[in-house]
Length: 380
Image 1 (spheres, helix red, strand yellow):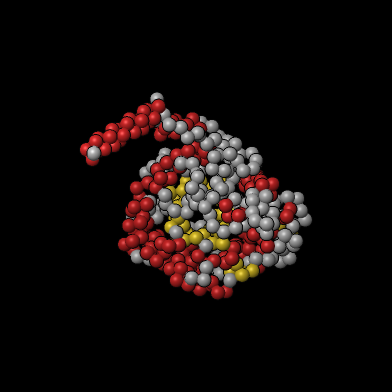
Image 2: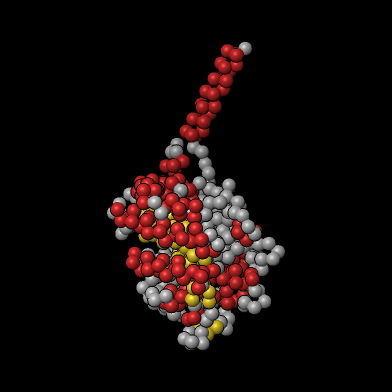
C-alpha cells in the first residue's frame, strides 16, 4: 500500500480539481500553541478543501513550509519579538533568511515576513527602539539576496496604537508613539509594504456590552453611525476601525500605504466576565464578515479598495495563556470538526498508518526486543 505521505499528495491533487468557493480576499492565521493539533500535512489538505490560499504563521516552522510545498499557498511568516535585537545585526538577519526563507522559496510561496507582533502593546522601549532597525536590516538582507521583490517586510499592530478612533475621519495615533511610527510609515512607503492591524470589535463589545450595540459589531442590521465630519455612514465597527487607521496614517502625511487586517475574529467561549463570547456570536461575526469580503466591499472612506483580512484563527489552541477566550478563537477543533457552522465544509483526513508502515514498526519492535533479550543474557 502507498505510504501516508503519498496518500496526502494524492488527496491534494484531487482537491486541486475542486473549488469550495471561499473568497480570495480571506486568509487564515495558523497558530500552533497547542499539544493536540493535526500534522501540517493534514492541515494542508484541510485548507485546500476550504479553498484557502493564504496562511499567516507566527514563526517560520519548517515542517509547515515543507508540508505546503507545491500547493500554491501564499505564506506570511513571522519573526517573534524575541528576535528583534538579533535582527538589527546584518549578519544575523541574513543568516536567518538563508536558513528559514531561502531553502523553501522554490516549493513554497513566502511573500511576507512580519518582524515582531504588537510591539507597541508593551512598555518595553528596547523592543520599540529595535523594531524599525530590525525591519530595515531584514529588508536590506532580502535586497542583498535578490529577494526583496518577492518577499515584503512589515510588522503587525493592535488597535491600541490609536489615540483616537472616533469619528473614523479623526483617527490619530497615540502621541507617545509618534517618534516610532513616523519613520516606520516612511519605511512602508519606501518599500511598498502593507501596514498590518489586528482589529477585534469583540474587545470593544466585551468592555462595554451595555453601550456598544451587538448588532453593530456582528454585521447585523442596525442604525449604525454617521461620521459628522465626512457624513459617511458606518453599519459595522470593523470598517470604522479600519478607516480610523487610514485617517491616522493620513494625519502623519501618508496616503500611499495600504492597510490590511492581519487578525480579526470572535471567540466561541470565554470566562464569566467575557460578554458575548458564544458560538452563536462567533458564527455571526465570521460568517457575516466572510460574506462581506466575498462581495469585495471597501470601507465607506475607501469604497474602491477591497478589504483584505486574515481570520483568527484556524484551530482552538489549548495551551494559550490568558482568559478562556484566548483558547477559543478557532474555526475548527483539532479533530477537524467545525466549532460552529458558517458554511465552510472542510475535509481533514484521518490519521492513518499504512500496512507497510505498520509492518516496519512491528519489525523494529521485534528487533529491539531481541536486542533486549541478548543484553539480558549477557548481563546475567
